[in-house]
Image (cartoon, rainbow, N blue to C red; front, side):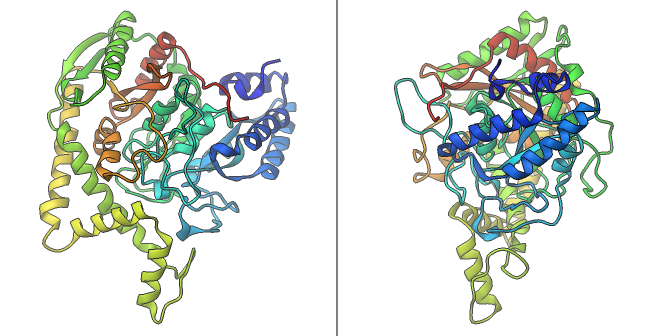
Length: 492
């Protein structure tokens, strides 16, 4: 019998429906795998009792021929999603032991469709990071290693726990959030599939806010089909979120396997950046050739304002973060450090509760929003954002169906390699992904191959607003050509 933790979500779904396997067996196998892989630090909280209770309920439904689209399938939840009665901290000391009395809309959709919760997954503190090294609970260790090297590598961030858990077989799929690449970059680093849907496709209600005009929830999975299955459950209009779009949710799984013949795929010349490795360049060319072989037309396009995207993003995102994180004051919930008066209590609480990277971004955000600097920085960054969006619109108006780019400028790097140096070096990991968030577009990262050291490299596809279906069709074409990749098990 196939090892339950090596199944794809679609394979596990079919086995459960045919009663060839029970949700209890599937869940127990994942709980055992989680226990053996605690050295990866992917989970910050395991919920075995809840998982087994949910699995038992699913087995009862399946025995009656009932059950939802995800019935009995064990998933992991990023610690940015509020889970009723289950600790939710955003991996920050300031929310230590916070237990919500409500459920995020996205996770409630998963439970509505029958999924089983295995636990809460590690992430960069308040989702601020590109390596999962800023977490209050310590860094996540990637299940991947360089050939002949035992050095611990980052899984990417901020959704590093989600990516590592899916890659290591510690869940069948996981939720993530993407503000500037926090789903697509870790997916590329770990050989998994991650999609950031169009802004407004998934509700943000009940997700700890980082940058409200950029944040978007999405799934991690091992295959394009699995990610399509998960996104259909996660997406949908939510009257509690005014940015949620009231559009029907398509059957994304039906798009997997559709022909891409005749589609026009854009290759943006501005994404050939200085210092990009030959391997990334070769992978990009190979991805274009795979799509061309499947009948797509490859055309060069221009996104002239790309070079301004990263600096503009690192004004807009910290500005919104400084506003959103003002609510963490030690008064109503979370950590409180006493002071002589309320002002000192605020200061001490926030100094003790926030980590170094979060404090840095709050300071940047407060600065760019301050009197005398708002017009010079924040307003100008928003104007650049509009120009970036127009660049994409011009491509799509010219008949381009999607845009193909690298997902990251390199493969995964070692834990500690970039933390102590220039923070801008870490920010450069988002160079290919932030434009998508600035424009509110959907983007998917799909494994494209391995580098010379045996580490995964990913390709990114960027689509028209609310046209995730095209991304799933194109992504599956790349997946079929490139194959799937899994790390050699060394941690258990």
